Length: 318
Length: 276
Image 1 (cartoon, rainbow over the protein chains, first blue to last red):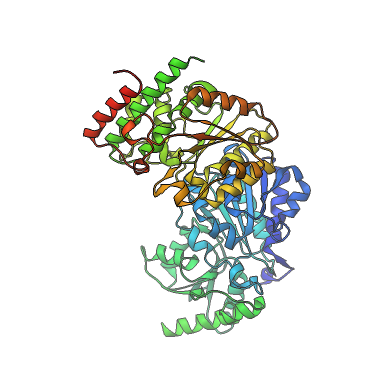
Image 2: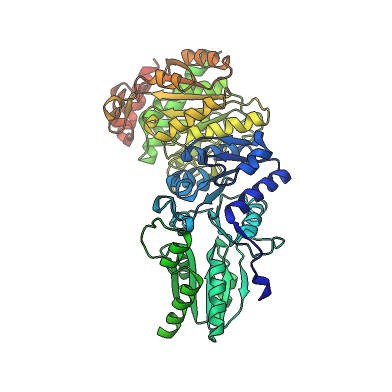
């Protein structure tokens, strides 16, 4: 259990920015497109180090995505980052036709995902980004659990695929607990805890909360497996196959709408093989609102103790 | 410049466009026909490219932002020997490399990028032009836009960014045929004063008769001399050019001739070229 100690709190957006800066040192064909909020999404770290490889395009997300596609045609690896709400949902057609249909090697950083964006409220809380990107052919979606893993996912996106890749991260500092030296891989996940009663599959900031929920449940004699599903597309189907052959209850947890996100991906998959009772925790088909991050997570049952309560009643009912 | 050779090519390409669209039974005839002089000039005279090696690094790039006029691109590429002219018959059919709108992943030689959703090609062209500049390459990037397409907001984001980065290797050609599916552009959504708009966004603006191949070539050559700015050629064309009975008629934007009509259109075309 010691390995889950909190060494520091760090925002995943910082992991992204540092990863991008360091990847820039290793790969000179990485270029970055700025969409005005460079410091907020931490691409200023790259811009300071490589001013000649940073291109501001202003507040024009549609052009940012397609401009990046043009850069990709010349062998560059362009990164575009902005708030996930705008860089994914405003530009969906650009991502679909210009990036995915052309199989172009662009990387999209979606910052400020989830309800924990806090006071900015609904317009700035990306809660549907996974759902809109997931059905697009050729799209890769990574949703790392903490800053270290976000750092690693930047390298994974560059080194493991030439397909358009979305990396989802958040605004607030959260426990930074994964091993920075442990590489991530597309289509893989990590098992953080093993237990026979229930399997919690979580993504992004909800991995830590789920882990804590599992530890709370353990004290009550309920033993949960906890999986960090940081690769949303493709999913780690090997681990899911293993889970459904051994465990009768699944709970998914995400800072995203319950419709179409991780829960959707998991249930779509398992329903074809071994339908397994699944509780999907996330945002219940409503827009977000202003508030402190913790208040909002609590309201939407995404704090660890709330998650543990939900799981307990789910297991009791079934 | 062998004017007669180029004009003969425009005749052959127009014939192919009519035949392939009649065979396909759907597609966009009007715009495809009005761009024939421009495509002939680009592929048979102005641009560097190599049909034997379509991915040749020294090539100039053509980005067809109005993907719906794919027939003029396909016919031109076929007449340049990128693929057999016979393959034009497969347009829009199951399993064809000639998709309804150009598809890069179809494997058809000469397709730089898939397009079809309006308002995206110019942004791609901008990124491409910047990427080439970063690598100190001299290749040109030519983007073909429709006039109706300029109603897309994202086009103006691209226009702004091209002058910001002084992309003088970028050439945008606007097919100013004045019509779109719903009717005249001035009625659907006014674009004028179009030249002033481009100019105020920092572009070097030229205009020409896009159906006069010599006029277009000379205008393009003039544009080549301009540095420090991206360049736009507003090319005035007539939708359906070459078929007198449909010229300028917006109803032929997304319509094709029946097999019976094809015969009369081919006859009109021959008359237009003084062949009968």
